Length: 469
Image (cartoon, rainbow, N blue to C red; front, side):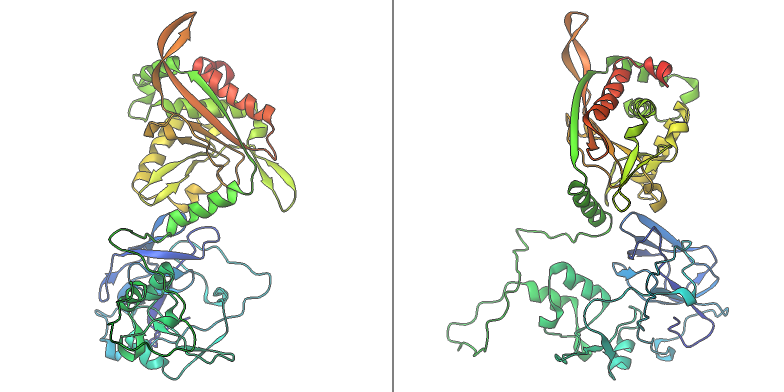
């Protein structure tokens, strides 16, 4: 759908940057109207439910319009930027720009699904489908032209009235204001607009959730036919509300789904890892590992891979639709990482085939990318088993929740110097606790115990890495 009248203006649509994602939030624009852009140039950064992604523009030209401001959440397939590809040097004045047309709902053929597209290249016009909107069908009113001009640059807004018995007009508001109202739990139909042409502003939404001012004692109580619905209010000096979105929203949904779908069982083992810690120090001096990340996590990851090789049934998933257990003949090793945007679990593809130096290199790249907030959606897809290191926070152990679609997750506790019976005498030793959670639908207690015991045996006697690998 092209919202500009000029044939030379190209509309760049929000692409599907992951499998089945339906929306993304615009974090930052790197260009403004009038800027020259070239094919492949990054024009904005967006955050999906899985990661932050930079979007490149697929053609040369001059930016004509940014349809949404930073902070807007936009459906996949919706135009977000207009570029004049005719070679013009500057964007025209707003008065010369035709009002963008209102969005047209297209009926989606039954059984069809979203087509994955290459990042930055949108989808073909003939295949574009918009998600069915909830609620009654809407019709465009005669006032839409004036409102579209007012909202130009902030995406198409339909001025609509419900097709039904109510006959009430849809409240007018820009997309960011609608999102704010949704986050705060405010029904826009109850908000009194103060903007031009009856448009609801951010201030109007905030006013709707603010505690109502006390009425003067002498004022007469207004006559009402029915009590108004209570408006949610909170003391901003004592509370802060943070909208749940992006990675954090997706993580919350995934964890709830996992906890209430897969029957979790967690087993624990406390072990002496003194020899493993000594081996870590020796490997740091190995010339084949110079410049690579060598730490206890590296050897624990290798120990888990060896245990999976000895007990391959642990590396599986449950197919509810087909009532089948899917055994994986490869290991995509997930590493849980805490980032400013929330918990993510990127994974090392085909970790089972990697040598120790290759595994160290992959771990280093994974951690660095996660810290920079540049983890791609592809890096978080297809994991088969996960490690979470709660020990870095000084925590002894925990009961980790399975990453959705996986059958096991290993938690590493803090490694501490503790009194330990070693060769018949109490000595200070490096000790830690491991916790393995597994899906009891496909992993019974015997299998889970064997895997945890194998990991423990390797870390107590790391030479077994050579004999068992």
